[in-house]
Length: 499
Image (cartoon, rainbow, N blue to C red; front, side, top):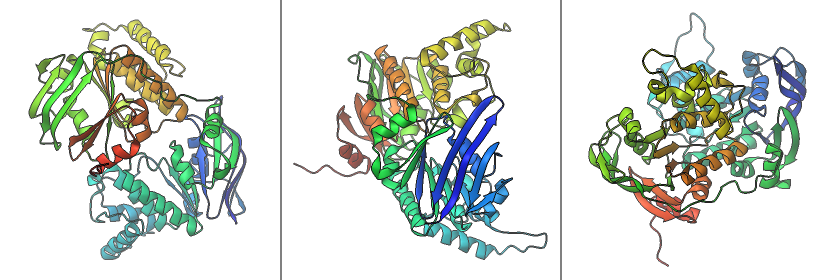
């Protein structure tokens, strides 16, 4: 097989920080090569070097056997390199067909747009990957998974020889994941090389031919997938054994913290929710994308208030009409999208940490910077945040540490009920283990935790009870230790056969 892409001893620094240290990497024709590593290991920097976004400091890049210098994004695309990022880079106010055309069409001042041909080509590319998306639809009306599929269609249309997929399944349903896997296998069968980045190790073993692991900016090994196991990969990534990734419960559930009786919201399609959440308990919420899990979290936090049913906190009926009232009643919500609703990357870590209690930290016109700094230092210590200090920008943190600061913001409100929506999405296995320990410790201190996750092993490993949503309501409840098949069957609406 021909070598499509090769990096030899690539080095990249940002000031005094060495992001890549003599990394070598090769991608063969018709190969799926997985790239693994903890957040901050150098994966993103390596991808930006390959796509021309960063100029390397030392080393060599060869594409199709030819050495390439002064690589730029435009030149990388011309040489057949395409990258599909976790956050799609599409124009929301343009149609799907227009977004695809912007990537693929060469225009001039006298260029005449062939609208029918443009829509036909978009439809053909979407059909190739099995995506049932209207080419005339505005991108802003599409779900995140649908936008990712449009990105894949763009890469296919560009005739890319090297396709980089950065956490492509992070927001896909199980059906869409299977569709993506079929697309990846089709690309491989047609000689395309795929660099596949994912924190979900089961995907690596299902798709990849080889795997390269980065740690602290260095390559620590490349192995055929069939010659390595999950434990060995984790040890290569984190530099140590991670044995019990899901810590056991430390105490029995206590008094009722939150009770829902026939709660619903016509605006969000949630209806008939009966739920009890007790102190010291972690309740996992499983279900497919669109089942209503996030919509329920938004109801509980007052973003889309309930219009039917009753919400009780500590046995007393309450009205949650907006986030302020939710916080006042002791409810905290760490949302799914870190980039939009979690950490504000341009602001200091201290400001991110105290944002939800700003009026308490800065009453009136007094600036209590010392109090803010001390509170932030306490959370940095307690949550094990790796940072240069409270004044470092949020964007300087790795994904796992950003998630810890997003959690700190709401822990600062001293809640009684904590809602976590996809708490470890896009987080490496080492950081996941740390976050799981934090969640379990919070439950042991009496916090009631509702954890929403699309990662089924996470739900099964962390939950004292598992609830399953489908069609906007809870359709099943299982105890800890439930079989994954039973949870998935409930999420898919399959009735359990009698024994």
